[in-house]
Length: 362
Image (cartoon, rainbow, N blue to C red):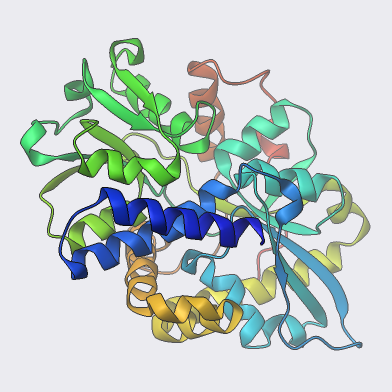
């Protein structure tokens, strides 16, 4: 049985035993644990990547896109561009694959020529450049960080200072979420050595939080949605209140830009159309996601809620508009300084080589 199927079965069996609540609430918890569990399975093997193509023809140019995790509704711009034929109209036969190693897995596949394009976090791109990996961001999609810290109101944790001496569930050390946690604490002047970090896998983090085994947890917006659906009183500390570092962006390699700039331009243009369409029509975006991943139909309401929240909090600019995809030198420079301040960079590299705005659609 494939890794993902085994993982889902394990999650469902475990969580039915440890979480006791009414059927409706349990349903939502299981939904989110399925999604998070699929992500957790990512640490097992890069060989279990999965691909899917819609509308394959022999007249188009084959293109591989590497996503950082298995299918999620927050990747809707790509699924929409695929489903609506925007890639095909550009003469591109796009195959979407899913890495098991997060953003760094996407970057590795792109710089090794196994994929022409990928999707990766700014923090991972900066770290990769510090290790001489020739990856470049080519189109800005996520304007802000999706990470946040969540605590139950009853704990009294409302600010980062309140985490001192408390048990804090976090992903594995070195993960994107952990990196953002370190930056947040540093910016707030909180000594992370005074916090009891509890490394907790994605499959166990939410149950640990619900069972009061930890006082707070690192969270993607996915967790916040499930807790809100349960009407749990929580305090949320947003990463975007402490760092201007953007989230995940479209990437390619230096080699691709040098050897095939026309392909890069076509891909970015079609992806932007998918982004705009998916934001303007959230329901249609989820239909496109379900076309790609039919099993998501069982969680359509949740996936729609997740995508709408992702639009409002992560994708739109401060005026509620769809940005033009342009990168800011200052934000990349600030991101590199933040990573260096917490001791995570091998070395600093030229900021202007981390991204390009030359392929922005008109």
